[in-house]
Image 1 (spheres, rainbow, N blue to C red):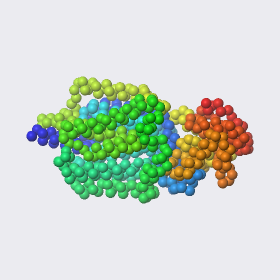
Image 2: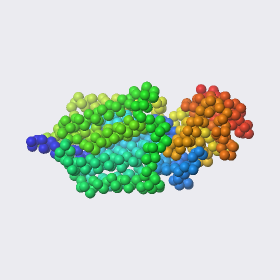
Image 3: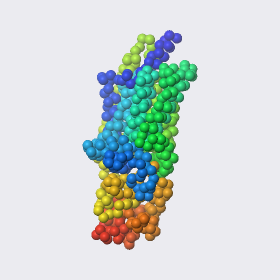
Image 4: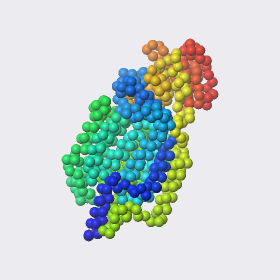
Length: 548
């Protein structure tokens, strides 16, 4: 009985050890090697189309202030624009001034690595450094799948910080004070800031259950007072009001959830449906890594209860909640990778703690590993780091990403956009696909507008339907297109079409030689002008051969 008590006491000590029990410097080699692998996995050339309107907005905010109404589209120019991403946009423009796109890409890779690193060294206290390194390989692969230049990279960092704090607060309650500035920063960086209050609510539920029911039902006692526990969720929720839009900004996630973007964006597609429609190469490492991670995380709860007769409501609810989010939308899979890795590491650490007897110390268990296990850990980590450095893992994501720190060749319609914002050209453009509209907007420097762009929280359902109708009229070479696109002044917009996703529209406009003229073409895209405008500018028709 005494031996059992000593084991449980040691387990409790490790369970609440928190970030202060970080690995010793001498044992950091394998974890550091994993983090280096994460960095290489995330270091692929820029391919996010949203990056350009975020970058433009960050460059315009110092002179215009934070947006209130739509700046960029002419179809929805009277609609409000709640831009909670403004701090990310300012950061992006600052990085661009310092080092251009290469520095932005390196920052993106650093942010993804930092999110993994925070949780690697703050969770799983009691695990050997070798086990710690191996545990975080699957989450690293899962996170890297969506490590794009988008404000989501900051959400990954803030979520990791919240989880670190929740894993340590039973002994270091002062860490809870950090939640407020973190939530304020998160609220002004990305619409997923709502995960802060959600995670806080799960933590409050966990603490409440443990205070009310422990030690029954396998729950461990919570050392915090009721006043401390119950104050966290209201405080974090109120922190979301600290933004330029007040209550509207705090409620912005509801608009994202129910808005147009939720309905039509590819990244909002349910994960299983997305994988069915994606090229097979994508299944070679990303989806299997997430699936295996989810299975291991779930089994770790069974293992912990079998070994210790305890379990964590916090971790179980987090895994279920973020698992649901990941299945519901493909864009949430990187968040799930972080949470599942956290749950797996913490549960394994709880299992390791029961190995402590009255004659064993926590330090001994952290450093103990068999020779076979050590060799296996070295082999796994070295293989992961080697494949990540070589680019093989990134290549097998199957989505065409390219290792490097520039812009992916022929991915963005930069040349077409620069051509289309010359003096004498229309100040309005119909750009398809809508992601490429951001590139046109960037080169228009806020002086040009588009029919519709990728800010789906701004566009109305009617605008989206009209966007689809215009594309159908182009593909059909329908003469009604001209009247449909003609603005109040009677001027027709320029038309920019992506060479990868708008082949039918390009073919349709090429057949409308009386009305439209192809005035620019390169491997990334095409520019069409109304025939009379092209005549005024002295622009003849160009060959469509570069588009093939």
